[in-house]
Image (cartoon, rainbow, N blue to C red; front, top):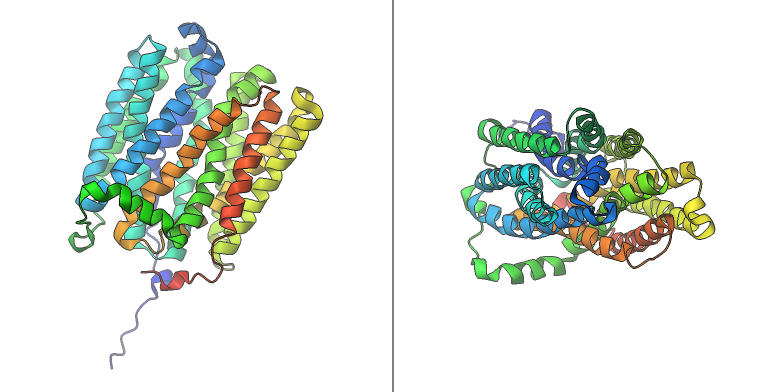
Length: 410
């Protein structure tokens, strides 16, 4: 018998630099969503429409994210992780240039959808690459590290967008995003190595993709955490959609103040993801997921309570505190839900990553429509929508089997 000692896979050193590079690739998504938000009122004036109308470019972006991820998932399982990254980032650069040069709101909406079709490849491929190379507990830590980088995007993006507006018009924001897409192409070329081995690539016919997605959703080890995470994260995109009207139009915040609030919320999200790295050594991933979901739902319910009692006269600091905990709680729910959902999906990690991401943005689209069903004050609208979605997400999270043995995942 050999005396050679092996390092347990959960104890192996984390490739931190590589994970942070993945975070930079994924950051193109939140950067594309958040950076132009301070410019929405100005864009609305240029296009001769209301802020609420031009805000429809946000759900237009979400549409691209939903369908794009569902395409890239099975494609990356079939041809590997690198080729889809090249295609998606090239499409993103082209779409960003269209956004920067258009003078039509409808062309803007279409280009934003194309932009999302390109950007979403990063989220699909990076999650799948982490699954290709790591076990569940390390996955949760890796997702937390990745958020440390990609999470800077929603902190810095609105402030960066507001800074651009001080010196340039809103078109410059999209020129910057096009340049960021070129940066991602360079990162892919020089630093992203293929993680999907030939023997693990899918050979299933492409005409069975829909059936494969249905089969994946029926798997309770994936379905419950993925749907729960989708509902909880999707609520954040509802907030992104509603924030300009609520904070700038409703409470009269300036572009700089709006950017600061956005940054504080994102900082809370990042802080809890980093705390999560240490908590995973002491608590089970499922327990951390449930605690985070409960925290988010309580905060959303408090926001709804303020909307019912005080409406648009609700004290702004209390509104912001509720929103802060709704968003910060994602730091506990998202890394752990992703790790649990992908744990048993080794041979279809791309599809699992894609479906998980698409669920989030489906909720964002649905939540945006739900917002418009409440012809009432914006505090109540946002509180009611987030409470419904987060409540359903928490219910799904509590359906995850506590006896699920993640250590047996291969």
